[in-house]
Each structure stands twice: as structure tokens, then as C-alpha cells.
Length: 208
Image (tube, rainbow, N blue to C red; front, side):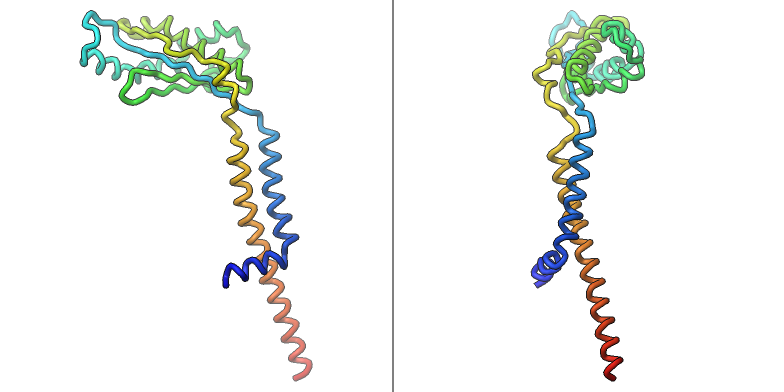
């Protein structure tokens, strides 16, 4: 019965409901259109400790413990300055560092180095520049470091924008629009009922 009443309320105030829904969805669509797409490029590195005893468990554990050090080192000004030289960009070191994120996969020696930019080519270039700079300077950070590139960032993976998430945003906007439209319809129905009740009381007073 409640659902029937809601449908009846929406039908009675369909214009207000539809306008509110369209306003929310249209607002999200406008934001999606105005926001510049952001592209993500990722290079993967494998970092180990150079050792005479190849493949020992202790060596693996030591290398794994150092991945956090490597992670912080990649995001240091020291590496960023070298990457800036390779890129020959007008962006400052601080701006480049804001574009770069680094994470390590738990239980592995793989380091994932990602860069975001509104141009996919620039995102790829930044990720690869940081990767190469870190490999060149890693021995100065950890003397026994042995770092190789597993995969360079490439245009094929970076060509799909990661933000804005247009479909997700439209879905959220539609949900908010439905809720807001329903709220407006219920508000108008309540006001209509109060107005109707007030008129009925006045009429009863006249004839009493």
C-alpha cells in the first residue's frame, strides 16, 4: 500500500519530480564534461639484494624488507630531480612528485610505480623516467641493490582514462536525483494536504 501511495504521489507531482531528477543527472553530466580526464601509467620493478648466495630464503626476506626503503626512495627529491632532467619538463620537482605513487605487492619483490597526467604520453614518460632514474641511482641509496625493470609503462595500458568515472558518477547522480525528486514530491504532497485541510476547516466554519 505504501508503494502504491508513493507512486500516486510521484504521479501527482511528476513535473517537480522529473525536473529534480534531471537537474541532478544534468549536473553530474556537466561535471563529467568539464573535468579533464586523467590517465594512469604504471611501470613495475623488481628489487633484490645482490648476493653471492643466489635464491636463499634469507636473501628474499632481506630484499622484501628493503622494498619499503625503495618505495620511499623513488618518491624522494633525489630521484625526482634526475627524472626531471630526463623529461626536460617545465614542471617543478614538487609537481612531478605529486603525480607519482608507489606501492609494493605484499609477499613479493615487485614495486609498482604509477604516474597520472591529463595526457597519456606524459603519464608514460613520467613513470618510465622515475623508473630509469631509480635504477641508475639505486646503488647510491643501497649499495647492494639490484633493481631491474619488469615492465615499462606503455601507451596501450595508459590510453584509458581512470578518472572521472563517468558511468559511476552518473549512477550516483541518478540515485541522488531519485531520492531528491521523491523528497520534493512528498513535500509538495504534504503542503497540498495541509492546504486542502485548511480550506475544509474554513468551509466548515462558514456553515457552522
